[in-house]
Image (cartoon, rainbow, N blue to C red; front, side, top):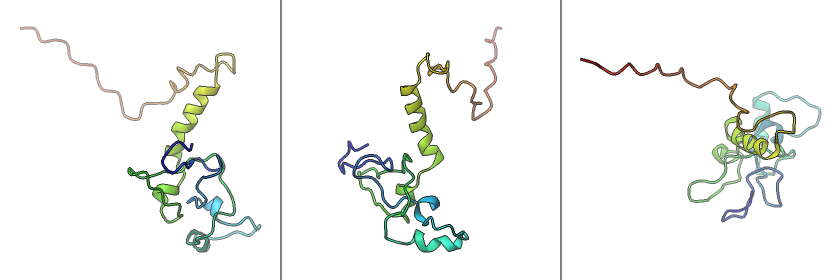
Length: 130
């Protein structure tokens, strides 16, 4: 959110310095009431102009391990807002804003209903007895 060597927020629309070339179809294609095919949108993907639309609140991939950030649509590993990348941000923000008085949500158990990614391991066998 700006506490980095570039003093840049990686959340679109937050602060004065944030990514302007987000790799996102809705952000890079002008809103002119025309439909464009998948290949019809490529002329904006390759444009060096800032996006005509902001995906405000989306967090982009961010810098590399040396704190370098290339604000270019073609560098999607830096500028693409992904569901996986934003899920942690959303969960953190929910935990900061939710209290027991709000909607009855317990921030300690909010994700208990999410099924496990992998099947559970079977229990260990009983100890061996000769």
